Length: 243
Length: 256
Image (cartoon, each protein chain N blue to C red):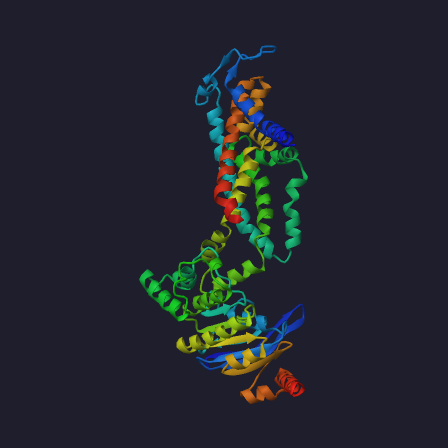
């Protein structure tokens, strides 16, 4: 397995936030994780990224133990719900940021950023500043900035949570395309049921700090805990009432 | 109604501008005794002596500039970096409370309390001593000033840079300092002005050996040399005016 997380535990003031966390994920696959606010999703991602220390457990990436390595050397990029574009840099420089700090030669940076801008369908926006583009475009730039560094693992913490329904749908399509083009391995956290089903090769559900990974889509749908059955019932009932 | 409004406006402008005009006129005068309506001499004679050693104004201006620039640069940079650690510290509230400590005493009393230590350290009456004493006042100001900059969003930016492969130095150089550029400039100006107009602490720690322009103004007034005093005041105003101009043109408009 490419990502192996074994028995991770995390508590704050003796209250367990994440317990018995185990993940096994193959290379170039996306695990989508559904969970309500405060269930421990963000803490889980931050522990894997190295931004929050773990109390116990092991994290391995491509067979190498990374839980004792600092965040900047793990090659794991964490994407926030907010785009967090650097306000003093243009779209082009925001995307180039990760390459610049790795001291990659200018002409290589230029070529890769231009290619990424095309992939993100942001042609003509490279010289604009973040405040001059829309919310969806900003989130695309944030995506490009993360993907261009070729991270071993991408962690997405409700990346489309602040977008409207239409933009969200476009971004979901874009992510699926980029994940395929750039062979991305990722953990995709969301509180949106539909998004969890659409985005993941595998699906998991998190509740009160415990993660449950389903062997296939139908077992996720048939588990009453996930809320899929209740949701389906709601739409069925609504349809029956209408006709 | 229009006349009234114009009258009030003119009075308001005269009240603000008159002291400055009068100072400038006084700096160009000499031998102006009561009840004479006009001075004996009016011209640039006094200003011609600015660069000379007799008045010592140019030297004081330079000393003031060196002290204020040193205090502003050191307190702004230290304030920015250390306020980050204070803001993210678990005992943030206690540390912030301690930051206000230098302000519970008047600068003169504070200077008197510090003078023993400065004497023991051998920096009493030196330029470095005055810089250090003023830093003790300006640095907590910078700490308090920057405390509002550090928040959850900035922490997220720092974390993001870390996951993109950047270390602490890269985060400061490429993200935090550029993002705080406007605030850094405002803090620099404010701490410069705190130092530039400081009198009490400077007079105690400097013991007359370090004659900043503010000290010089008081010395001229004590000697009843109002013309040189006025000239020193005019020079005292120059840096703040330049800073207000730069602040307005390059910082304030961008912050808005």
